[in-house]
Length: 112
Image (cartoon, rainbow, N blue to C red; front, side, top):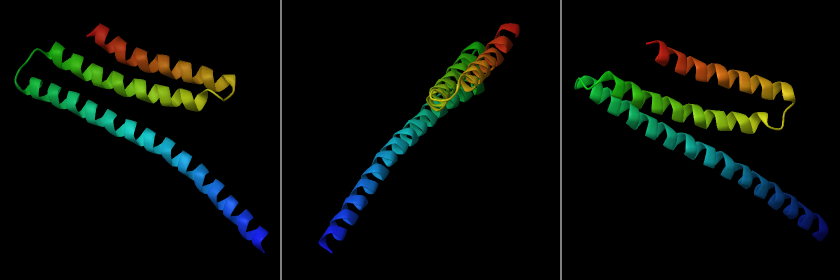
């Protein structure tokens, strides 16, 4: 009887410790996401205020570009963590998508 209680306690503690470690990882990701949104919100709000005041549009566009770049960098890092252990096809798809996103941001800025 005593052996069964001990083994069930061991199982519970190991399962709870593994769930705690996954909660820490998710909490870290959630925290990063929250503060990224806060920083980007600040940049977009600043560009909105400057635009309303009639400040040069290049400054406003630059602030919006920085905000967009921050979000893309965070998402790209998290996507790489997902793709890294996968097959080569996933990695190629990741690189192609990332290049298209970067081109979609840079080309309109160069053309206009």
